[in-house]
Image 1: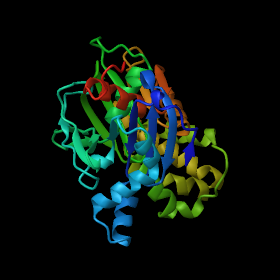
Image 2: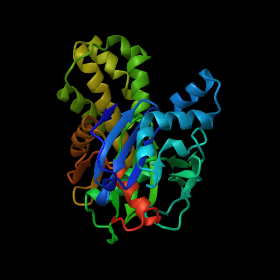
Image 3: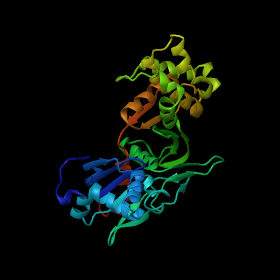
Image 4: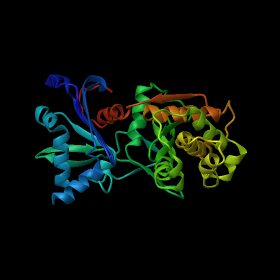
Length: 335
């Protein structure tokens, strides 16, 4: 979907892409990281791979065609401005693999290498690498690191202090990230979103769910409180079935099952990551996600006693802009 109108060439300084597994977002950016025009599409890397198979194209050619479909007019009209992307486009399944940076990873370090691919003769697209936490059970991220840098920039969060900050990026695979300054020190991934989707659509619990157009907050918070209680120590695999038995015993409405299950799972995720912190030691936390998911996590975190929560949306383009500046791609541009 295209939004906005084409602007004068002098205003455009960067073409930025947040290119993920199932979707792609393109930003034409101007002075100081302002967004001049924005586009979104369902042409994620999985759709590009399908296109390559169906049309008997090389994967590289399929990516070239998809980029042209998404923002070919920008590339033609703004021939001299840099093009840079973050996300799964830099994975093994993407256009070109950008090697992971290991933690601790300074997000604004001008020394880390960007991968490049030729998108038109003589013109390159730069790809931002992801981050690897090489612990006993390794963890990886692609794209979230750029959202975090954007959140630091947009939120004007202090970056020189020693105090550790937490960032939460909820979604299919939620990321919990510890950051000191602009450096990621460690992180973990929870498959809450994907597991919720499977349980609510494929499991026996799905047979009881009656759709509703509004969030049943009482049911959601009830699920969170179960996970927060001593019953929650039993582990999610031993509490999830209550989404069925509470209905069977007349203590939960079918229209409440979806939100109760959501609360149960988000609550279990929070408990697994941060436990039950004391009020005066609970970390400051910034959520980078869509408004509905952010609202759910904020409500759940407050039940766990975490009050210092802020929410930011659309942080990726600001992070891409900052990296383009620190990498020297844009002479005379301000961060």
